[in-house]
Amino acid sequence: MTDKDYLGMWYRARARYGVDDSIHFAVIEPDSGARFDFPVRHREHDGIGGLFHLLRVWKVPEPPMPRSRQQGAPPVWRWLRRGAAETVPAPCWRDLSGAGDGGVQSAWLDAERTTALRHRARCAGVSLNTLLLLALNRAVAATLLREPVAGRWLYPVNMRGAVTRARDDMNLSSGFYLTVTPEDTPARLDQRVRKALADNRHWLYWYAAQVGRLVGQRGVDWLCGRFLRAAPHLGSFTSLGEWRLDLARAGFSPGALVTLCGPGSPNHPVSNGAMIVNGCLTLSLKLDPVLGADAALTRTCLEHWRTGLEAES
Image 1: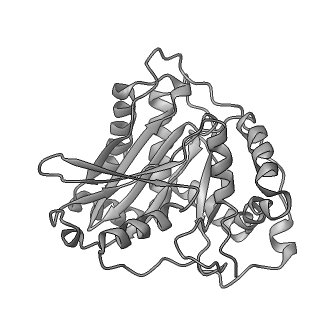
Image 2: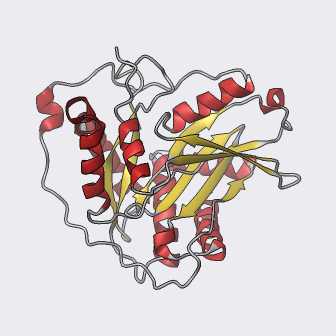
């Protein structure tokens, strides 16, 4: 067991290139609209770890820690094999003239619409994450791209329980790249997600991200610089699942909501976050300054995401 956060080394490296590593948590009071921001450094925590870090600071009773369905690493031959690489063109973004600093925008669905959306996912035989990502991809295509085309998202996978580390709030997430097309249906996209998980693609990325064991921080810094100049993607999809939280114990109202938004980067410019808190789905969006989008356009994209989900509910 180690207390070294090898994934956190990548976020320290990004900071050396001027890329912020803040995970943007916030508590929102729906009745008043008040927002209280609680940034957490990704170099120290992933999304789940960041949430538990805040709950411990607030002295709020902790829910069970989510764990992977896998009990450990599969045999090497099961995760090292690779299928044919997908050829996906770089996103063709619209020419925008905004200041490029739209900040984090947040929205939510009430408990009734959230329940209806979950019911829709169950009836369709797909995960809620599939509906969330498909609606997000359509919102990005409609508001930020010149035309709807296939794009790639980094899809997260929780590794807690499959790997063991000294702290449960460290960076213990992996993922894989997932192509989403304009023609995708929920069933088709969900099938590709399940196949990627069955192929253990997240283990390949998990072990690749541990390279800091061998090359140290300077080596990770050099590699990170190369990756930041690599072909761009749409973004990293962020979904934290469902939570029951006694936020009144932290001084907030019983109806308070929690939102989060990932840090993003110039080659993963659409930062986002989704989670269900006390029955309500929260959504957040932030666009990297490289896109030149202002707060109004960020809000437009977010509202397109929200209304797309409402149409599914």
